[in-house]
Image: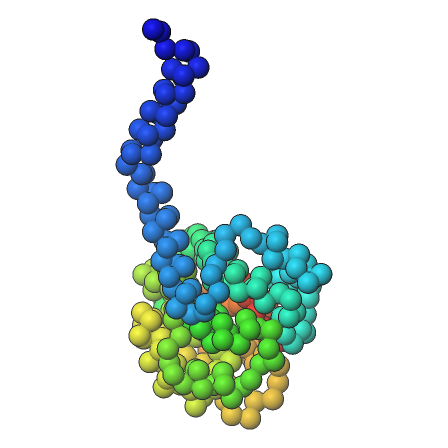
Length: 278
């Protein structure tokens, strides 16, 4: 008896699906899945919160606060002088930081920085420098903030400094990529951080353990400084310029890292919805 046409088509579709499912997965797809698995495994070690892909709108709408719009306002420097992340946005910020979104946003920034660096015409006198912030720019304090509400709790200098002194902060991979590129083309990295002079030894050790070496200088805040972050960092950049150095680039996670003349020939702002430094 002849097989009904509809049954024949159904069997054909099933056979095609089996062929597709058994076919080798493209290398790029395998790499993406492997990277996602590694990101989620790393996030699980930092915090029990499981990163959710595609959950931004749902999380953003909880508690009556548009958390995604609030975070955009922070990055655009329209929302300023805030002390803590809105309490109802803890989940949103946590998923953003632990999932792939934060890494993707950072990658876009660093891709632009690397593309710009490749256009630089160096004078050959060893005077071109690139200024790097440290916290949430070169080293990540996410293990600390994951245990402190992702910024929803008031900043506690005592507990944060204790974390810094552990010297265990992981590197931000995208920034390390930019750093390596700059060293390879002859631009001298300079670290300019709000960390204090008494944290120099542990900061140097932490940076070296995370693959950063060959920098020109590490500038830390001196005891007794009372001014704003903008005043401090712009003042240190002015000293570099007065010493004959050309600041070809400047990257940080806070607007206070890159505002205030001399900013540098080009500035780059990395995302950070966990805290604000004015």
